[in-house]
Length: 250
Image (cartoon, rainbow, N blue to C red; front, side, top):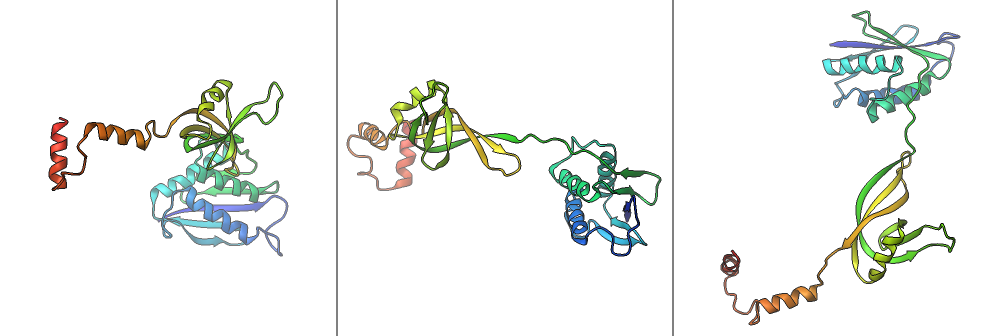
């Protein structure tokens, strides 16, 4: 069994007489730490003991990888090196920073060796406000044009089933006009998404194409021309018919 200690201290006064870390915040911290180190089972990481007269949490794990992850995460935080952190590790760093604030410090260490990491102030990486996602939207073009008549106004379209304006270039606007309210299209759209809320904050058209270039009526006419005596009239055994049809096309 591997042990690892997270010992919180107050720079100005000891944890006693009702002064300390709210229990709910400590529970939240441990919950995200479990995910940050890759523990997937309840027995992978447990609270073995609380050190006397301190917030010294003695953690235990039977997994050498999890024990290694505990060391690496706290070493990086102590050195203010968080750029390579995963989402789960960043969640832990945010919770830890909120608990430490301006007054507390953390000493993280394995009681069996001399590798100790002191964590006080550290910076969280600045995340981009938005990210972009490319995907297809199927629907009929229901609106096209500019919301106002100013020279610099951007042209936008609306697609049935997609609840956001989609910016288009002047060239795309002209190409789309013949399909206005007439055909179902496949729109390739680049969405701008808020990093925090995951809401779509903007969309731009990359490309589009007809959902089905041939109508059902057109395909029916092609089948009729290929089989003028009727496609299904003489079928007695379906499997045998399709075997013959496949052979005739080879």
